[in-house]
Image (cartoon, rainbow, N blue to C red):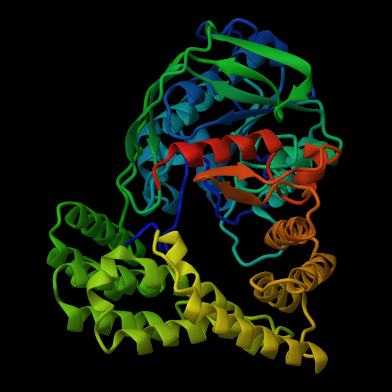
Amino acid sequence: MRGRVVAGVCLVTWSLYGLSGCASTSAVAPRATSAPLACDTALAGTEALLAPGGLVLLGEMHGTQEVPRFTGQVACLASAKGLAVRVGLEIPEAEQPSLDAFLAAEDVTRAQEELLQRPFWVRDIQDGRSSQAMLQLLGQLRDLRRAGAKLVVFAFDDELKGVAESRDARMAKRIGTAVEQLPGDLTLVLTGNIHALVDKGAPWDPEFLPMGWHLTQAKHRVVAMNNSYTGGSAWVCMGQQPCMGRTLPRRDLGRQPSVEVSATSANGYHGFFHVGNLTASPPAAESKRGPYGQGLLLRQQADTAFHAKQFAACAQHFAEAARVDPSQGASDAYNEACCRALAGDKDGAFSALGTVADKGYTSWQHLRRDSDLASLRADARWVPLVNRVKANLVATMAPHSNAELFSLFLEDQEDREGELEGRELDWAVIRPRDARRRARVDELLKSGKVQSAKDHFHAGAIFHHGEGADFQRAHGLLLKSVELDPKDGLARVMAATAEDRVLMMQGKPQRYGTQRERVNGQWRLYAVDPSVTDAERAKWGLPPLAKTLEEVKAANATPP
């Protein structure tokens, strides 16, 4: 069901919407005072961050009490040293006037009420950037300004979408503009820890370019710090699950609360600030639910009903979610179909799946394998529905790719799906079908209708399920696919696999270790050329040889 389908906004503890802007450094003049600033005791080592003209990125997991409090402490210590301080917050730039008004207001109670009515503070999804701790940080910064600190607060995020420049690039540009306006100030930036990275890459994308990387490339003097903690809790938003305080895993790092900074970066940061246990900080204000918020609540209710096996109620909640918030219509309809199928309502399930197909759903293989829909597969309406979804998938092929060839590839995959489910394949039926597909692909090749990288990949995959000289042909086609699209990781894996298959058929050692053989009821790795290194395997997207040997050992330990 859901989580395996189309939709769902996924908000992790660092939010990743598309956003940007241009910095405001406007501020009302602080009150003059001769009294020294009173700062809370800061973490040992904090002094290393207090340099005029410095740009310190404080990377956090949004939604805790401790990190905003630490940010305020650093701002206070810097101000007490006589430094001019600029504090950047991951808040949309549209909120800058309301921040300025709050910081300058005489009546703090009224100013806070007005601030919390702003769109940012009453969003449908209240992540930790609008928490009680963030509001308290603003109050602390306001008090510092009124005590005479030379302190400015600026918002560097925004809500622009559909623009070519990435959110991180735009945030970096906004921060850079603020730094360049007053280069002698100490700039403290509180942001999600992924944005703070100064090295390229993120857990989900090795090519991701974080905000810290952009600032470093622009030659700013960046010190990137990551929050370290031992456990506790944080206010976290995850997918369609409700935002809530969640327990964090315990991590015994052997550290005392402190700050450690290095001149060079490691793992994307120059150091860490360790605060011990974290404590979740809930939103400062209640959200005002619009259509999206109403839909999110209904999906949460549907999810609860699903896990309670109340499938009829689950279906109703998803149907209502699609009505009030059409933005996730295909996903809601799919999930509704799953719940109706599990409730025994076949007519309702097929009606919902018809909506799914109408909305362009393309996950053909998932549809065919989803256990929630098992009760529908013997129905005469099932195959026509699956074919509609398959047609949607074929229609997604790039303009210069061959739709017929893609259809042949899908048929090839469909014939072999039983292997994934542990079923014996009927080779007496499949082999003649394979031969017919190879014959048709051969005709397409001779007529010049195999052109794109995907075309060559699909043709290579079909010949890979051949015999004799077909393997050599598959290897050549897959190499051409890699040549035309070097970023296609699957084509690389398949090309290396085809080469190993060719060598195996020739009685020679394989290069990469993709081929196994069964001897006396036990799997073993076919002979491997010892001159091929793991670095070469990695170029083709394959694991180290030792890991492959472990997989073979595990396969033999698992009963057939």
